[in-house]
Length: 212
Ligand code: CTP
Ligand code: CA
Image (cartoon, rainbow, N blue to C red; front, top):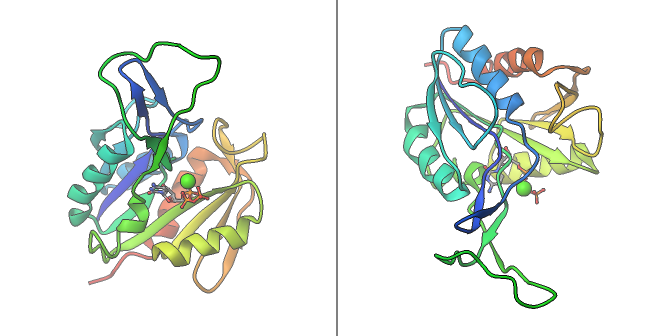
């Protein structure tokens, strides 16, 4: 099978020397990529900048901005049977990026942001993807309800929900505790290392892959 995985944060340029980003380490997505490559699948890993070594035996597509990640996914998803969207994508980017470094002037400064495209939300209609579609939901409240809303809006077969308000799990941590949110039911998992969860998420995702 061919598995496309997005991972890591994105970077949205403010000017030639500055950018907006988030706390994603990329560990969860890379752990899934590792598990998939180990299991002998073809892995296409589309990743924002991380500190992690590229896993062996994956096709690695490095990107920075959400727009670049969008275009890479649009291109590569055609080849995939399963697509897992673990990236922490910036919802907004600066409206204009000047060629020169922005100089400080007044005592306050306002940065205008515009909405980025929703990559996962484009998979079904815009990219015409018919394989198994797995999203993530990072929430600080109403974990299950919010994740289920994303599952429905984005046409996913499974959403992996995690509570990013908790300090002991999530973004920077080596562990995670997740809820598997399916269209008809929800399955809570115990806290595990991200490596182990990578294997579990891979198995749960492969079980949703089309069979023909
Ligand atoms: N996602 C994406 N493209 C975006 C935003 C999110 O592909 N522009 C994907 C993420 O990779 C994740 C899922 O959508 O798999 C949910 O991301 P999340 O940030 O939790 O949800 P949003 O839809 O952006 O909603 P909000 O941040 O407002 O809660
Ligand atoms: Ca978001």
